[in-house]
Amino acid sequence: MSGLGNRSFQGLGLHADVARRLDDLSRSVASVQSALAGGISVAAPAVVTTPARASSVLNVTNAVGQVTASANESFAYSLSINGTLAIQSDGAPLTKILQSFVPNVLEARVKGAPASSPIGAALLYYSPSGIATPVVTFTIPAGAKSASATFSALIPAGNYWRVDVLFVGSPTQPGSDLTITVGYIVSP
Image 1 (cartoon, one colour):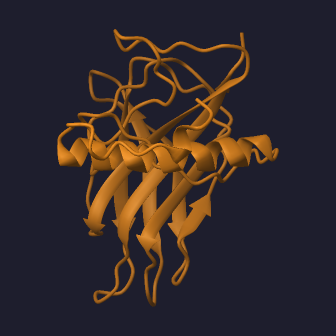
Image 2 (tube, helix red, strand yellow):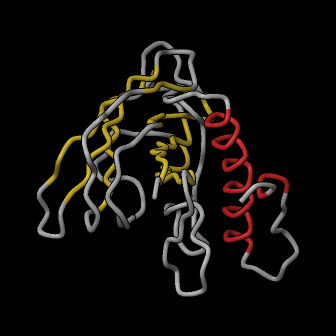
């Protein structure tokens, strides 16, 4: 999907929110591709969205929504909590994990940095029966806008992502617009 980062979806007759989310995706794809091309194994910023919801998989290329991939193709899930952050559980939109993978990019990023104290966020996945499995916990320091982590176990398909905000910055500047990116590479 090279070149997607330079595309604008405004003015295509799409719902305004859908066009905005696709524009966010376009910018994020370019960022992830650049980071992966540079040999970075962890910490590439991205926001990944689908037309209808705020999270899904990059490079879904066919009309029926099936993930298609060639050798060493990069994908990313991105889970967003928009607006001013507050302590909450399961704050990102429902997103299904479509295929099993081991992540190579795990990053939490905010648009508005927290003041005085850090932001803590947990990434988990849970089974259709509701059993949650922790993946990583991010701590974004006061004044910073991102944090990265590593996780080397397989994340199984058929589960769902969950993002919990564990703690936020100061009451006057808690931080805003959290996005957690989970990137991976598909090899044949």
